[in-house]
Image (cartoon, rainbow, N blue to C red; front, side, top):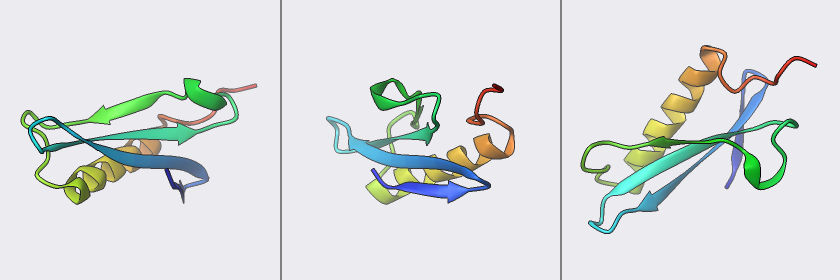
Length: 78
């Protein structure tokens, strides 16, 4: 997974193919508070899945940026 910087935060997106040849996507935030495999992942899906890997990843990217804009994914105060 490749991570992207947006407003001093890092997030990554990836897509998985369903059994019915449709796609779902996930995104996660990189944070020093969530090292390793315990990073929270957020699933982005439509009722029947996305028609392409690209559209699934674009929707996950849009959701990740909206969450950052709303303050989700920010580091916890020390």
